[in-house]
Length: 259
Image 1: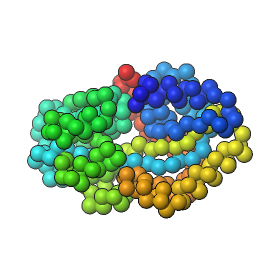
Image 2 (image 1 turned 120 degrees about the horizontal axis):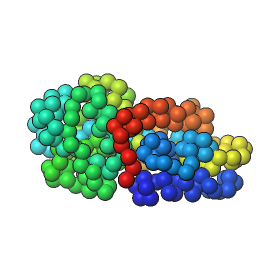
Image 3 (image 1 turned 180 degrees about the vertical axis):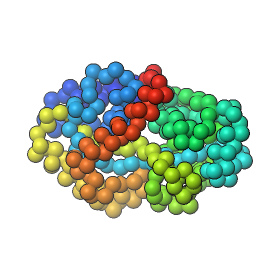
Image 4 (image 1 turned 60 degrees about the vertical axis):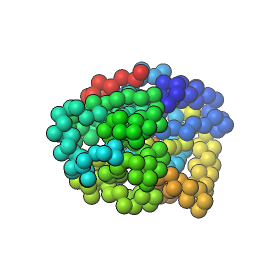
């Protein structure tokens, strides 16, 4: 993501007049990871007013087409056999795929080499070409290749299957329970934005997400829309706090620093 993983644009919104006219589409990078990756001039939690969680994009555990493993347990066994020789592409240091890869290693006892690219699309090109062994990447960029048979998908890092690819098992079903990772999207405003403005904006998001056309389009991209009860400002704040509590220790223990 351009601008120090989105921190530059996010900082401008943090300093903006809280009048309801300057908003931010924040995501896992900007409102969770960056707080552990960078020395920011703002607080990712305290300097914003949550409006609504819009959608989440659960990661897929992927591998090159020539990977000999046919399921997730087989992939984990193969990684242990390669003894750190395997390669995993990422969209960059501190990206969702990188941090998810650290979490994956922690849970499975595997070790492999991370190959940081300047973006997920470049890494995906090399995965399709067989130049790297695996990736942990969202379906928005990977699902077309999976459906075309160009790469393998072993599991979705969520508790439910993707409607757009229902044959891909969840991590719980595939043998790695609890490996949940989603790059979510949400709407935020600067701290101090009036509550009535926040309520009006939140209601507008809820209304938009109820539209069948919007829901269908997001589902086609592998996006999951939260139920109405999780679209409130309060629910977003609770979710963001939980994500920080989960991921900051993993990022800091791995000593990952923003580039």
